[in-house]
Image 1 (cartoon, helix red, strand yellow):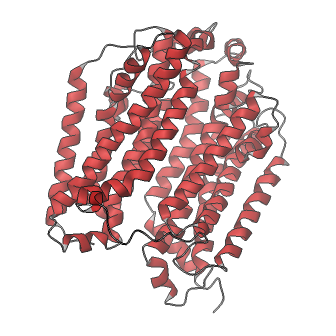
Image 2: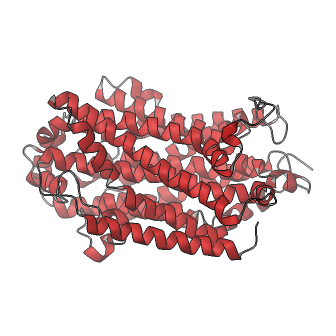
Image 3: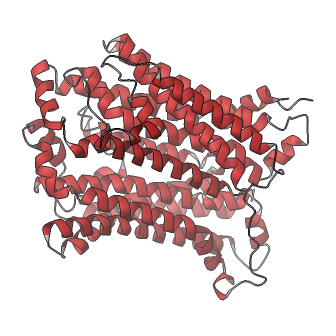
Length: 527
């Protein structure tokens, strides 16, 4: 038996386990780029229209930091590459690192890898299979983007370059996730390390593009943008990504050979000899399990709010000279451009915060599959009280994460406007998004109780909501389609007045889904 024995069988197993999630992720990733190109064709059909838009965004440090430098903005291809190369890279990177982490460290933590290794499965096979599946996913996204853009009439070279750039970024972060899986014994910590690497890559790219461009060369996202799709393509930056992916894979395999199965290179610290007072109940345990993630998400949203809120005063300059861009920003509310811009930012932050809600909600399923739930329920702890402790922690934690983001936006805006009242104003506006976030959290609970093996579909639901938020207005999607997303029903506070009716309706939907999930959990078997 070799180190790669049964790799092919594990590839097939991984594809079967993710037979729903992988196609959905591919369609969302490719659809984002293709719908963006199609919307630009409708919004800016002539060269004069595109020149007007390009004059608005060219040289604007804020847009450059968010999306990267604009090149060939007088063409549909150049606009598409500018708008999607950064956010699209983040999406494919996130998919890749979650996929690799799920089939390496998460399976090892749950004991599945040990079970497979008891058979004729080589030591390297699980990691190799996960990387092969991730590579296939990125190749599929790159191919769909290239073929789709060519089908829309865009130049073939630029279409291939944009698809290859995004696929290359995904490969690099698949390697990052493989390395992170060897470092720590916890799947959550491994995801945290890989996620921090992605955040650092985005920050380096943003800082480099806003400056002299040097820091961008330290980021895989910057390498993808350096291929210059639709602007005199350069293919050699792709070699940097391929070399990095190969190096990271080699490092991961070398580290794998130097650790024990189930352990990480970083030793796990032993806990105290006796549990503290806060850990003597199920609620205290749930809070302890979620504490680290809650603090990390809250800090991230707060810092992000500070950065975005600091440019709120300049929102008028962002849309100056482009009536179509101003219409896009103010379409959700009737207030000023500044308020409408920051309301859109709060909606985007709510989508991001929902990532915490889904991750925290899925802790129920993780505790069950790891056997921890069975041990707790063997004690005098009922099913519903145990589940309720995690639900309370998740839903309350969602409010904390949203509040942190709103306070960050309000604090930065207050400093710029010299008005301390902006802090509670934007904190309240952020909390207005909470019922929509709760609906997605309730979807996790419903899946956990009724179809536990499909609980990861909640991530696809979040992806669909994000796609509708990003592209729905641009492609003039019908109201019924936009209405599928709970975020479409939240008033655009502070640009619009707060309406209690939609928020109460969303809360009722979340309550109904939660009750259905708890009822299903009460009646089904554990495991």
